[in-house]
Length: 345
Image 1 (cartoon, rainbow, N blue to C red):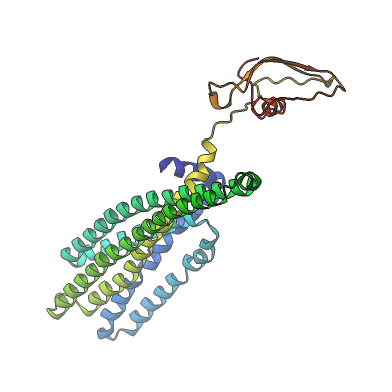
Image 2 (image 1 turned 90 degrees about the horizontal axis):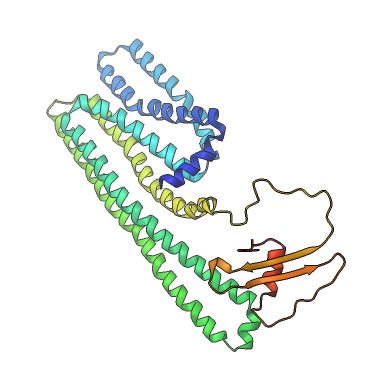
């Protein structure tokens, strides 16, 4: 996974300055937005004092923060790739909100503080398990889809050969068999989502219920002020939807990762036909072709496609290559066009 992300960031940080600015905005935005519940607490706790001057100051400060960098950030976040948005905006945003929430809850009640930490740790463990399962299932689906595409393309290109040997039913049954396996893989992939939804919904909703129940009891006992209860309720209202968003965002990350893994994997393919370090640059070409003791095999196969071939074609001369199928006629032309390099000669 780290190899894929390394390749991803290699392209992303080509615009290093803009990348740094964007990351800073990602961190600042949830901090400012997470302060909203605290302003509700200040406002409600100050109402019984009838200090309107102080109430107006709190309200004005709250509105200023709401109109800050958040609006500018919201307009631009949709321009980035889905995988970047999922990893950075969702993950960073939730982590920053989580730290702000912990700061306030730690000062309110240690039990609520511990419930929040336990919930976050438990959701992280469950998410890691299901994301790993999801990536594996998605990779299987992709492999079977590639196999189905290969069979379809093979039949479309070679339809005359299939018809010549009366293999229509055989090819159809082969495709049905692969599609059957693909369907089973797709359902396994879907089940990882359903399991993810059920388990995470149970954990997060149970946590919300426990925290609200505990906060309500403490408010009735006058251990919490009305403002404290509003603070807890507001934080739960603002944080857990983002946690839900992160959890289901990881499903998008899993899908995007499985899809982009093969895409980035193409960059790791070794170039088989390499140009020489010091290539020749002839000023004049005579138009002659010459093979000297050329030997060649596909993929290092023991069966040689060509073995010790010698051939010379002079300028303006026409040569016909005649022989049975598999004699090496096409291989000779492919070497000439340098689709491959000879093993010897």
